[in-house]
Structures are given as structure tokens and as C-alpha cells.
Length: 518
Image (cartoon, rainbow, N blue to C red; front, side, top):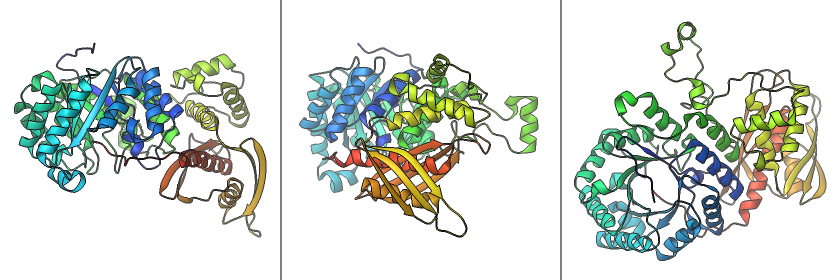
């Protein structure tokens, strides 16, 4: 039986594994989704939307596995108002301790006319039928009016009334296209809640997109007007400009509880580890100016700011770094540290030792200790995630040798294991990284377009680990890769190999349905 919540409690619904994954290049495999789900449980989110089970066999398997490993949160699968979707979703979550289903259909006239080719009566009938069918098998049903912010309010009120009668427990009014502004979005929630029979029997939910940069503001406006669930993603990832940022909403509620008068159950100290984990898995770095989790979020450059912070942090900081789990950046371990201490530090940083090759990670840590004077938490996170990326891959980088001078063209020799067989290739290029990439393409037989390449120093100093992110695209398929190493050419090679492994894995997966949702 589902837990009851007080009126001032806002539930956090995380859709990183479903809507977040729909962002170009953010696709995760099953093991990666399980790692994120476990971190979401450590965060103490209330609901995890694990995927869209009917969209592909891979999504079904991911939802099923997440449902099996997660204990406390409700686990949902997205579903259209179709019999096969509902049945697939129900099967995917059947082993969850707290199973649920999230059914949606568009209610805006523009979607009805151009996407669904349905009348309002058709939509009303489909919505109530789908909820009633799901209700025969489980109790926890969320229903979404897709494109609510561009829908007729009176028609939405009618749909919501009927699906509540059919058994819906949560009603979601999403700003699917990021079209709304806060005053308008808040007023919509107020109107619908006051014009729906049975509105006091359900939880009202907000799901916003960030096309106008207003996703968090719109979500807060919805809360002010009665919403008691916010649907969001780690780092705000998602289609187009992204979804509501989980960390921003949570810290807004915590920091401004005096105004909002509500609370949530998220353990904010797990925010930074969650942000880093998702960033590492999807191969997309967090922008430095990203609120809450960006590198500059607690940095002070202006002299007057620095002076104020030195006297009292409250002068320019409304949050403490430790409140969101940001490492202190102190020397945490050294070359004399043992394996047990290393494993314990991994756990403190949100890394499950069972998900990586600890022996290899520890060996890499020892090697790094010999190269660097200071080893930071972020260095350890990068090493651990590098090991997790290399597990069970078709392509493995063995060695890279590069030569370059002002008188000769850069040259690279690359050795890799392909399905366990060692192969070698060499190439020249416009720079050492370009030469290295051309050699890797020759070995793997893949040659996608490189759409993005970025380099970031994880910590300060010339001996810092370098973190490289790249985005490659082939035949309409986009994947991201990431690599970390004290040598930037090696980090670049690791990032490309990571991306190619993802590309090869995805080539065998057929997505029969167009990815969609609230």
C-alpha cells in the first residue's frame, strides 16, 4: 500500500531514465540505468520512471531490471493508451516492490489534429479505457494530459474528471513544449484543480520542459498552486533544451522554504554524486555555470565577493557546498593508502564497488598517485567511471603512440582489442588527436561524424587528469563518449572508443516506436 504524505510534502518524480535519456547522445545501456537507479534510491526520490517499456526490447529489459533492484521508490513505465503498451508496461514492472504505470495521451487541439488524427471524444474514450484497463492489474496509475499548457482548460478538466473516476491516482499537467510562463502555468493548475470532480483524491503533478529556460520557475509556480509532485531529471537533461532540473527544484524548496512552505524527502547530500554519475555515464559534462552542480556554482571571482565570503559565507552564498555533497577537494588518499580505504572512499562518493572492476580501478589509482602530487575526489570519481565504461566492451584501447613536430605531420600508432583479438593501425592527421582518431576508425571499421569534442581539466595543475567528451553521429544515430587520463591524447582516444562501443551496441537495437511522452 502506498505511503500517505502530509499536505506540505512535494514528491520528486525522476524521469532521467526515460525523458532524460531521450536527449541526443544520452542513451544508456541496462547496466548504466541500474547504476543511475541505485543512485536515485540513495537520493531518496519518491518515484522513478524507468523507461518506456513498449518502445523497444531494450527499454523493456531496462525497466524490468530497475523494477527488480529498486526497493523504496515507486517504479513506473510510460505507456500510451494502447493495449499492447499497457500490457508491456505492466509486465515490465510486475516484480517491483512498488509498481506503477504512467499513461499519457495528448489533449491539445494541435496534437489531436496533426499527430493523433482523433476527436476530443476519441481522446476522452481512449484515456478512460486505458486507465480502467490498467486499474484491473495495479493500483498506482498516473495519467498525463500531454501538451497540457496548450490545451483547452475545460476539455482537460473533463478528461481529468473521467480518468480519476476510472482509477487514476496522480494527474500530471505537463508543459511538453516548454511554452508556458510561470503565471500562466500556475493559473492553469489552480483552474483545473478547482474544476475537476475528485481533485482532492489525487496528487497533482508538474512536468516541464526548458525551451524558454522556465522549467524550474514553472514547476515552482505549479507547487504554489497545489501541485505536490514535480517531474524532473538529474542535471536537467532531456529532449531539446531539457527537463526541469532536479537539483535546482530540490534546493529551491530547501533554500526558500520560508516562501514555498513545502518540503521534499530528497537527501541533498547525494545531489553532487548523482550529477557526476549521470555526466560520466552519458558523456556530457556539466556546464561550469550550471546552478547547484556546476564548477562555478560556489566560486567567487570578484574581489568584493571574496572579501564578503571570507568574513561570512552567508554574504554571497545561500547554500553550503557540503549540503549537496560537493567534495572538499582535499587530499583524500595517497600512494600508501590501502585497497580497503579506496573502496570505502568510492562508497562515500556514490560509486557502488560491485559495478566496476575494483582491482583495475585501484591499480589505476596507484599509478596516478605516482604521477600526481595530489589526488582529489574528482580524480577518484573519474578513475572509477573510466573502469565502469570499459567493462564488457567490444572495443578496448590497449596503447597509443603519437609523434609530432613542427617539421613533420602528426603520426599515431594505435593498438586495440576487438572482440578479444589484438589489432594495430597507424595514421597521420591534422594534429595528434586527429591522427589517433583516424587510426581507431581503421581498426574498428566505424567512421561516424565527430559532432562535438571538448576537453576539461578535472582538477588544477599541469598534472591534472584531463576529461574528454565527444559526440559522434552515424546514420541518424547519435552517441556520446567520455574518457579521462593524465595524457590528453589518451583521454581523447578513450572517449572515442567509449562512443564507438555505444554506437556498436545501439546498432543492434531497433526502436520500433518514435520516442515521445509528456
